[in-house]
Amino acid sequence: MTIKVSQRSDYTFKYNRKLGRHGWLRLTPAYSVKLVEELLENDLNSKTILDPFSGTATTGLASAERGKESYLYEINPFLIWFGNAKCRKYSTSEIDQASLLADLAVKKLTPLNISDYWVPNIHNIERWWCASTLKILSTLRQELTVLCGEPGSSPSANLIWIAFCRLVIETSSAAFNHVSMSFQNQVTTFNIEEISALFIDILDAIFNSALNNPSGSAEVLRFDSRNAENSQRLYDRVITSPPYPNRISYIRELRPYMYWTKFLTEAREAGDLDWEAIGGTWGVATSRLADWKPIVSDLPSSLLETTLAIQESNGKNAFLMAQYVFKYFHDMYLHFKNLKERLNADATINYIIGNSTFFNVPVHSEKLYSDILCSLGYRDIGYRIVRKRNSKKELYEFDVYAVAPVQVS
Image (tube, rainbow, N blue to C red; front, side, top):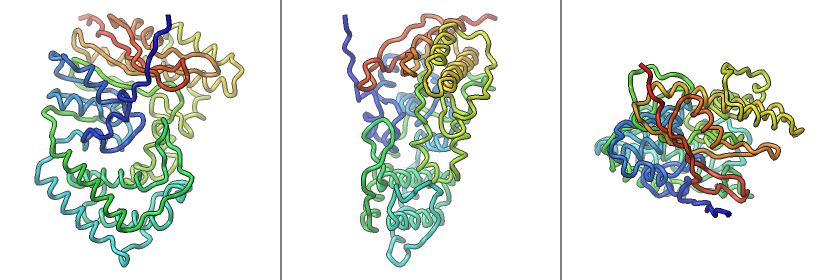
């Protein structure tokens, strides 16, 4: 019997786009607010929530909107900044101050003031913005820096910089018609009036949604989820969507934001950051796989069988891809092992994860997660299909769930 599973766009980033703060920036890897809300529905007992792979802080904000206290781990400095700004409680005076500063910056966008100011060191930047649009954006950035400082200077400044991030994407030639970023055939030209009007519209949307403060709280911590958290804090629930083992670079779509906000200055930094991330693939993150050595020896046999099949597939760079898959689940093992110490008794966990294939070798992420959890003593382990991911019939998104191991005193 064949079970029909739909693609469920309402379980993807597309659902978030018009939901207040959740729609501030469009990022494909973000998962759906609706999915998080369904997982939290009727959960009256969980007070403290953890998302160990924060991303755009969807779990944190959705939990805070339900009055819960949440903490999130993230290693990307841009996402730490953005997530904390997205989840923060804003006062009316902070929003009024942001509105005043933004208005002053927009008034500076006149033909006489447009000049060749700093632009980010993005490779082939003319593919993103034509020369005239780029000059207007660089002038606006200069005015914002003078008026309110760089991102992180103040809560008011953060709201303006988030709006600027959205502006640079909406004036770019980037096309978002599939899971990753591509480019339109022609670079669109914007004049001063069009950019000013668009920026004002974006600012208004962000300011209006910033007025709706969550009743709970959320904080994004700079922390590697593979490590043991150095605190006594315990969590009642874990809801997250970690990177998938599918070689899609999670930093690729972030790069234009990170360059314009100066969280990145050169391409190698992106590769270094991707190497730090679980499942990272950008630049040096792939080349370093050849020399990587595991520190865990008691991994499930199902993982060894999967990686051996990839290595023996005769595919191009089969050894590197086998290393990639092995390292991914090796790192997730470290995460689940250290997570045990931070869970309250009977805490539940939900991991939204996709499967993948390498050289026609299936990588059953849901089963490998389950095997790892079982080996570490987690209880009541299971998984369910959440949605079909694309036209390939074998690719799905799963909710892998479990209960915390019994703590041995």
